[in-house]
Length: 100
Image (cartoon, rainbow, N blue to C red; front, side):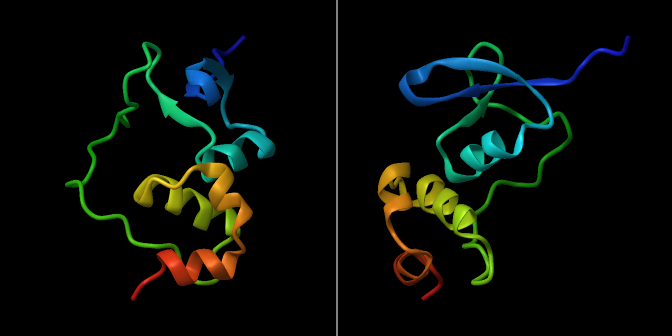
């Protein structure tokens, strides 16, 4: 039996769960929107095992990206609470957080 691949994710209240990868669609959507954050097993920030590019500024999603991607962008880059971003329309997110 092959080893299954898992990841650790922090949710609301700081609880850390180990979940099978790839994530089910509902959980992947929660990750995209910022309700879940991938972390290391000990709760420290998750670091990809491959060499990462130099950190830079995250660009906003394309205008035709899903609302979930816009929510995640607002949460990660602009520190918006996920519930507040979710309450906005996609057009509101683009207008407020899109390119100027």
